[in-house]
Image (cartoon, rainbow, N blue to C red; front, side, top):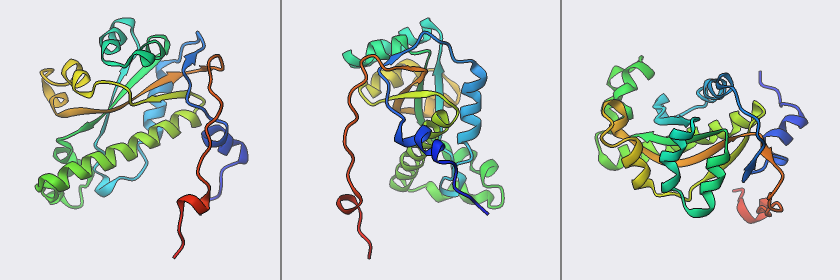
Length: 201
């Protein structure tokens, strides 16, 4: 039987969490990056298709490859972030379905229709990446999600022509990871109330 987490956990994951633009000069161990992935992977996807893929940039050289493809304001955010993750979608996700959905080995054939395939990949990859952000916050990391970048440029730099499975990966969004600094933090923007965004029938 499931029980609610603590009220403090709600603050950590949602109410007091922010999208950070600047970072403390404090490194994040690789073990915590791996723990974030290992926690988030349990989130549900359609037929367990799990199409999200992650490229973690930690070295200065790796981040330097990404910076030219970010819009101006995002370049410094990522340059100074301890870790940057390119969150991608595997457009050949169905090839792993026999291992991920073993009780139905033919599941990979459900996605032969191009529209169904593309919708399934994008929807579930994005869903997984939201789990990733929540897992990072739950483990004490701050996040800086970004969509201001050249997808085609990132794909050319990190995926296309790289060989192997990465040939089929395509960037979705980018997230900086570390311990945020309140310097330059914007006032919190409002959110829609229940009556504005919801309907009960």
